[in-house]
Length: 281
Image (cartoon, rainbow, N blue to C red; front, side, top):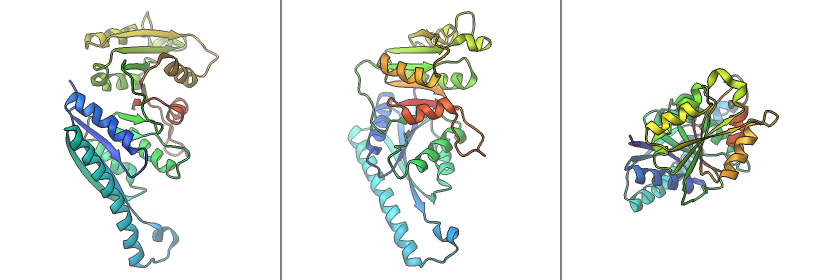
């Protein structure tokens, strides 16, 4: 069954256009509805420094962020109209601290959400990462992360599934079935299966490949036996060598009490990806 209801986070950044383009492309292929959500961030600086800031300055700041959100919505709606898809748009006024939970709320009511990869050279990178964390770990829905360098545009659309036999990978694969049905190739990549013998059957990766084939998805299994190499490096190199345009994987996170929420492999993929990634938690 195709996706019926997609969501994309929109803002006034230079890279937002790629995110919107990716979301529209999928909405058009699957005849889905697409909702664009912009966040108009309220200033809370006076609360932190304990000084009353004149209302005129607060109002002026809020007017700036509101206009930026309205501009992002206008660009989104114009792109949707040109593409001829069903669309809706929302502006959510909230503080920066509440933004991740607010975006997660909206994502909870969509089949999948499109978000952007944080650009480490962007002053807002930590905020973008907090949005990813909030939606991924609090929405209960998959997210499609678009690289800040843009997406590869290929005639042959190939997906790689990072498969370890665990429940997070299972969730990601089944969340991705509507996407996989539209692709010519799906590769089940199993790295060092001997280290997780209890998670695999007699032939590692074969069971999930057969499950996908019952959904009409052509899947092949590739196993790498390189115990001395880091799994995240192997995945990134495999994506580049195979010419894939999508990675599907489960997301692992640390305790919220830690400074960084994302686990090792997840964190590396998020920061070094040059290919779109569908993640589920």
